[in-house]
Image 1 (cartoon, rainbow, N blue to C red):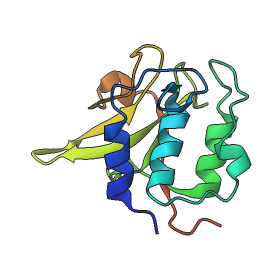
Image 2 (cartoon, rainbow, N blue to C red; image 1 turned 120 degrees about the vertical axis):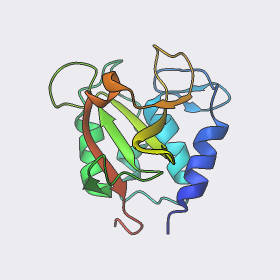
Image 3 (cartoon, helix red, strand yellow; image 1 turned 60 degrees about the vertical axis):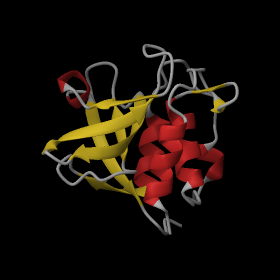
Image 4 (cartoon, helix red, strand yellow; image 1 turned 120 degrees about the horizontal axis):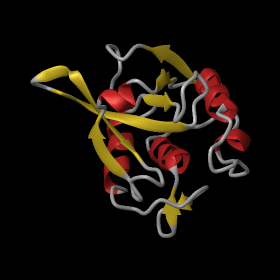
Length: 152
């Protein structure tokens, strides 16, 4: 069983860790998939295909097939309206439907449930941050997935 609260606590503790492409060690730096992997693993996620979830052999702007494959194998698609803390958001940096970026839903604004916050990192921010899914990010969403408690 994934402890979704622990996933979010872990992601939030990593705020401020610098961005490093292919980073998997918070003492050195993390990239977006490194942040999501570490947070989900801390919450008890046991990936069916650790070989895929721990890969670091991708370009600066990855082709997105890895993100899509992992999300489809390990999760169930949900809508933005259904999104809950610890759900995984796939986004593109360019137009189209191929994801190049991943983030974790951390919370909904209790006073404005249509406002969703995510934790993520990339070279633009330079460090792990938590922020509101603004219009720019909302327009880049290509999928949201709820990681299954028992995905294998």
